[in-house]
Structures are given as structure tokens and as C-alpha cells.
Length: 95
Image (tube, rainbow, N blue to C red; front, side, top):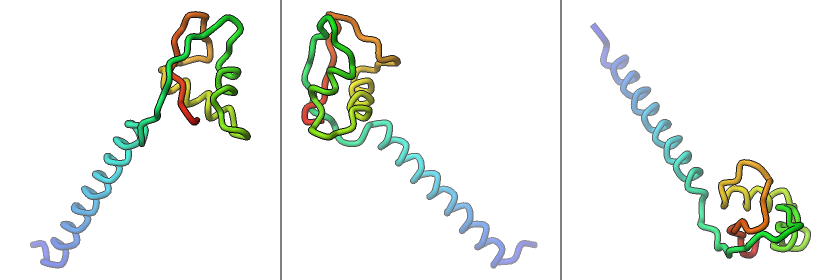
């Protein structure tokens, strides 16, 4: 026979586990949505452009370009840094 104390402890463990799982699920959903939306503009890639040169034009002074390049890649679902003239990219405004 399970004592009342043992049953209460098990219930507490189960409830705690469920709460932790729900918090992790919520955190994952928020991360997947990318947090707050980013205002963007469209930019047509020209000959000689690279993600780095484009990022340099939209970055704030002193901002790390690696983060801006990562944002551009994320906004445009780019798996690589390869872009071609004529491609239209979404660029963050006020990166």
C-alpha cells in the first residue's frame, strides 16, 4: 500500500515535470517565431554585391557585420552566403 506522503510526492514530481515541459515548449515556440518582427525593405542584388557588402550598408555604425549577415540569411532562408545579381533580398531596416 502506498502511503499518503508517497502519493503526494509522486503527484508533485509529475506536476513539476509537466510544468517544466510546458515552459520548454513555450520557449521553443517563441524562439521559432523569432521574437519581435523585423521591419524590412526589398533590395535587388547587383553585380559585385556580397552579403557582407550589403550588410555593411544596412548596419548601424560599429555594429558587428556577422550578426547583420546572419539576420539577412535568416530573413531570406539562405543556407549559404551565395547570392546572384537579380535576387531580391529582404533587408532589416535599422539593423
